[in-house]
Length: 116
Image (tube, rainbow, N blue to C red; front, side, top):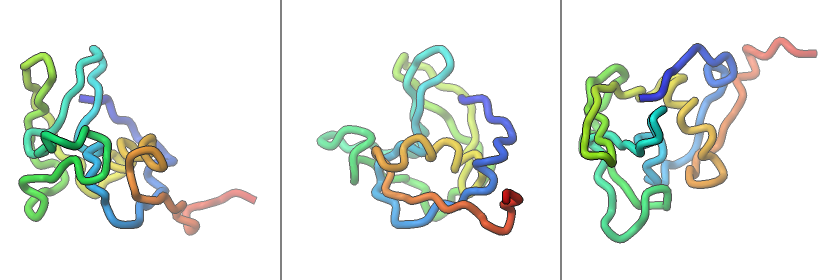
């Protein structure tokens, strides 16, 4: 749902650690303000989205970058989307949640750093 662009920072960051299954990488808010989540995301009935162990992916082992998915929206509609597994787009989606919901940590790819 989100418009993605070639973010130079996100493409130079790697994510490390163990996923805490908060679900923030597979959900979001559409430009029209409606909350959405991936059709494959199973959300706990007892733990709110964004908390550790609140979700699991039904297709975790078979997911791949570009895999067609449906984005299920809270207004009872759905939109076509694609999985961004293991891409800079996935990193871009996760970055705002690190230190809040997401347990992963970010690491700058030093080989691409040209600063002084």
